[in-house]
Length: 304
Length: 298
Picture 1 (cartoon, chains in turn green, yellow):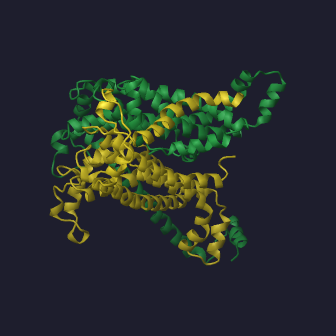
Picture 2 (tube, rainbow over the protein chains, first blue to last red):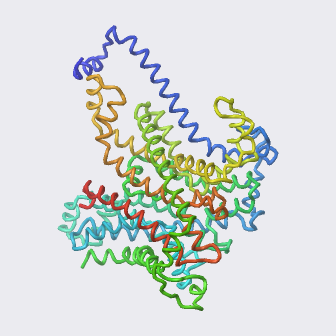
Picture 3 (cartoon, rainbow over the protein chains, first blue to last red):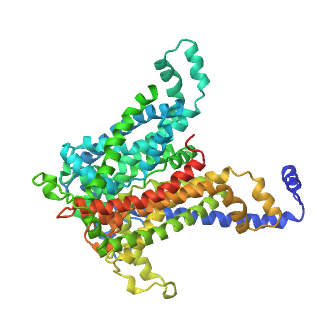
């Protein structure tokens, strides 16, 4: 049977006698695939489910020799211990505040700076343009655990250790190569004719930027902000090295790790802290999840 | 003048906080830079290649390099394999089921490295962990048995890296799956269909039709995976229990511990760091060439 014949048969909705058995095997195949999909989803979800479930279990349950999937006497005691700060001495809000401050400021700064650079790269042809682009690609690959040695020495002489401002500067700089790389495609996709037409109608460069370019690049800015947000909110090495022993300045990743290091056995509380750290970023991710975003993140090469 | 003005802020930040430190790593690697030099009580002295010769004669350096290479050699193919299989599965599922499975996968991807590591330590903890419980309940012919009760996954390099590899695959496969799915959607349905009509089976269709068309995507995913998996830090740092067990260091942890564990040896660590950076840059050249070939610089 040729392709067109198969198509025609399918389009007309006629079911040839021969394919009645085939439709049964197709249904079995579909059920098998769905079962496989469900299995993949369950295995993937299990660690996250176990974290949340443990967070609601009293110690007698998570410490029991036969683990149960769901807490039989759910409790909020673990969350209360984390939020009251009975372990570290500072409430969870303190660390959430640090994390949000560092994350939001670096997202704003990197988006703005990246937009300027993306306009330069997408709208102008100049000497060293290719050099600049290759520099961005290479710089992305320099591992943080290597650069942190020199940055630690620099930060010490610049008085940026134990400082959230120091973290903001580092997060902005390290988000830039990827955000510029992502944004330039969005800027390049805005038809130049639109800007030229507006300019002909007497709009100044600033007006063209506000009225034409910015609204059209907005989806790109959303994608790059998501990347910069995830990067700054999750970042571990710099926070670990630069924040040292000043617990009050800790961001959430360092707080969770410190909490785990200090309470190696209190898994209920550790999982509660980890849940409070993780759930916001997951909700955020599910809200903005679009196919374009995944493709954009891929193009920009997320750091792991 | 216009474009250069727009580039100044990004160049200033990237220059000061990424490129300049990279250059400093190069110069530090030829100096005896330690605590006294950091405090400024003694000047740094140029010591030629002595840092490099000390690193290259350190058996722990070679051990950590081997752990990085071997674990990346397992993580990368495994992540690509699992991700591709899930991507192919997603393409065959109905729309509702596909959305459900890919949303769950995105959750695994979105889990911060610190949380993911702490969760996996908890799953595999010797007292009360669900992994040991499950393994001890498995029948003998599946490798289970009471010897698993109380088994410690973090006390030796082999079980610790088994755990790390599983963790990295768990967080890494969703990106591969979603990218493969996005790639599959760009392939016109006629191509695999006509191959099937010509009598090709699934395996032949994948290698004869799908893979060649998606090769650019696979190339980028492969190179990125190599770069990420070779440099895994956070997961290893947490699972091996900070910097305690020297025989479980990978290259990144070795560099970090040399620099920051007492007594700090920034110069010595920079020599190891420079070697690390060169290895990654060689891989990056492949990445840049693949990007240029795809016309990414135009």
